Image 1 (cartoon, helix red, strand yellow):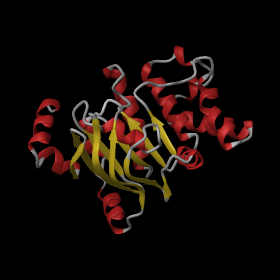
Image 2 (cartoon, helix red, strand yellow):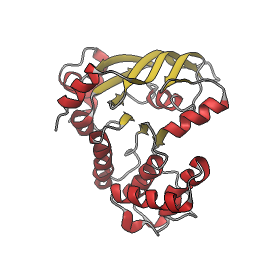
Image 3 (cartoon, rainbow, N blue to C red):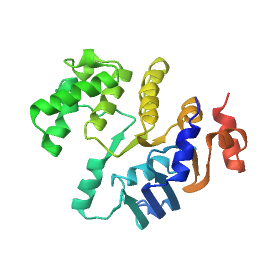
Length: 258
């Protein structure tokens, strides 16, 4: 499946949702993890971020909703400048959904209650609306029949689909995925990737840190390659997987392509 229609539309009418300019970050021990990275993600784009372990991928994506701070540069999310102002951070977090490697579900709440929680307390929806929307989202990710169960009663793939539904419950403008399949058994990976594919087809703006090559080839508009805290390639999936420009990308691909 290719998506030239969406690529063409994005190029014809670019509407930036994420604008990162010269982002730099150091950890407390002096380690320079992000070295002046710039990236623009347009509305409706799917950007897959790849790179070896320690390249800065997860750190970079986590700066988009202030889960990681940064010391230099600027980040703008849907027109809001990301700063240390907690009010702005709160607004951005309401508009940016995130799915992590671990599911981070509340074990004492049912699946339905996990999905309802944020809309009830952050969006201030009525219980009836939150419940109705949560049911629709659980149906969308294919696990409505698990609504009354607790997370511990589900498989890893099912729990990750609940986590996706929970992030979608806030009606975000952007979805971030930080290696969402890395903690799953191989047979559970495809069920999560299928949900992500459906989101991409629906036009959701997505930034995904993943090593799932098939997903990147099929769904991504762009592949961004990080190495050593630098953004070294930003190109189409076809170009990246068949003709990477740099030696670092070639070495990385030789290790993950079998």
